[in-house]
Image 1: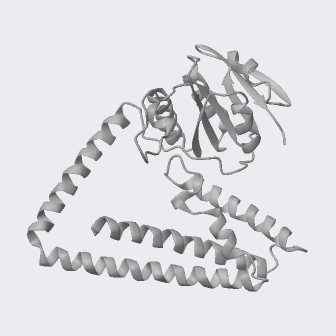
Image 2: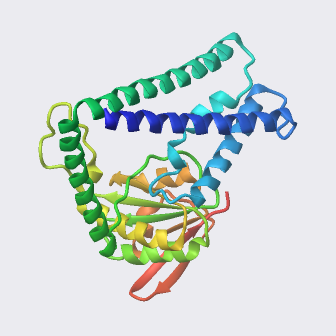
Image 3: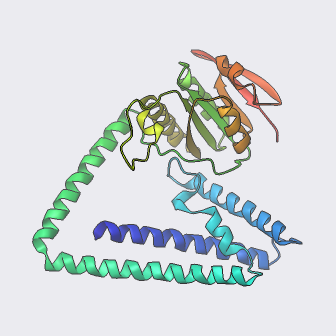
Amino acid sequence: LGAFTLTCLGLDIVRHRERKVARSLSRQLQNGASKAASNDEIAHDLARDVNELLHKSADNSKLNGTSHPGGLEAEAILALATPATTLRARLHILWNRVDFWLGVLTTVLVLTAWSVNLVSKPLATVFGGSVAGVGMLIALVNYRLQTQRGHMPVITTGLVGRIPDSVLAVLTAKNGHNDLVIRSALSSAEGRPIVFLYVGDRKIARTPSIFEVVDPYLEDQRAKEYFGKAENLAKKSKVPRSFVYRQEKPGVVASVWQAVHPRDTVLAAENTEEVKDVNPDRIRYELVPGGKVAHLLKHW
């Protein structure tokens, strides 16, 4: 009940923030901040405003591996902020309001049940609290040890679309210069967002269990180590970042490059021949202690 209460409360906070952002964008639209001749243009302007707002928030957040801080969903904000011009759109907005308050009611009911149990079952409260406390203590100690080693826990994300004026840092399993790529990307970012892409070649040898969700990243220890190093250094530099994991296949770097539209793509110099599908305006090579790094520069 306690865990369910926290889950419900977290979802309510996220949805409240989405509604708040949507109302702000709607007021901007009504005040003439975004003039458009058609619904498609309105949606395009709102999408741009949402992405700009979320990326600005990401710059100031301490979350790692996230493009949208606090779990905010751009699609949900767009749906709430777009002016309702049809009956279906009005019903959709009405349902979102009802759905939000139903969630609040669920949180109140679960919180009430949890509070009653804490008082009516004191022995269960002591046992459950002790187990949860020991578990949190173990997690805290493990987190501190990993941080001291420079290996921060990282959550990978999917690609959320274009990130203008960003840096794409390409890390691979086959070269020994990933550390150089990470440091070069951070030094050349100058406050711009960085997308760390790891191209792994590790294949899962075991047979997945029934109903198991298979994530190759969780089986790739080297990828987690390099992402942890990148997160540790990026956190110190206060650079907005996200982490994407892909398994090796033809054109994988080019597909991410096309999706992100980075200004600078940083990779080990010996890997430039492997990304022929990437079409930069020019290539700049940087000599760093320990090797050479290539910068694929593109003005979109």
